[in-house]
Length: 329
Image (tube, rainbow, N blue to C red; front, top):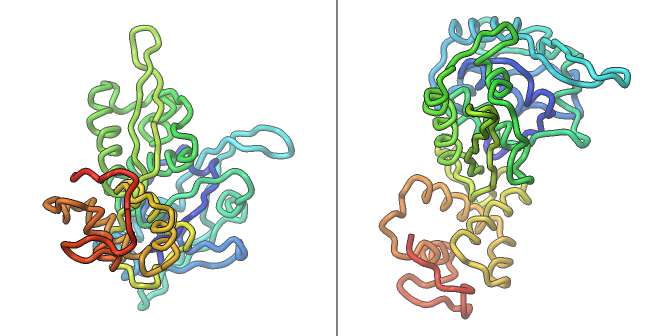
């Protein structure tokens, strides 16, 4: 199940130079959600219905076969270390991809040289949410989301040359090919689309800053911070037993409470201690993102009412709720 599952992906793979179509990226993300670090040599399976449920798109065998055929030949170029030396590695991820006829099942096995980048979780990883990445319809937004996730604890990414970002996104190569040579078009078609989708559909709030060298813009830095997560409805409304890792869900609920200026320590602890309350907070964050509560005067009051901690139209029974009055949004 991909809902609320966090994937930790080696940074070398996050920053590798390769280009996937939206369908290929979705196949890869669904597959990543199934990986288990204690089974590096395992054979993994995905199904067409599973792909459709995870992405909200319809697929057929022919479409998927064409996509995976190209993925089999896709070379990932990675800066890494080998025998204590820095190397530039060209790597194919898959050993085989089988379509089991008459079943709708796709069976995949990784190249043994690729597993270290998929399962090495020591100090060099990116964590991101599969359902958030799947919700992004721009293939470039998917990559930018993964890159920014790598730096979400730092506040911003490292400074990167625009040409290197284009190479990472598959928009340029070392032979001189380059798309969107006009900066305005690159911003409009790639950067601004990625920022808009990521901010609307994921747990990150990002922006970017361009840096001039001489008279031309040459470098880019993405600003990154966490926000109260919004779960796509395709993954269902959370039950009282919210799926995913409890500490991650609780942290997202905490972000929402802080956003709504609900800060009284005892009240915050009471909410976060209950899986049912955390589930309500996560769903409430989605409703805010989709403008369901735009006409509500007090979002904080509504949430507390839904949690049973405040009577509708009345005062809370637990005393002062906020450090400062919450302003209507």
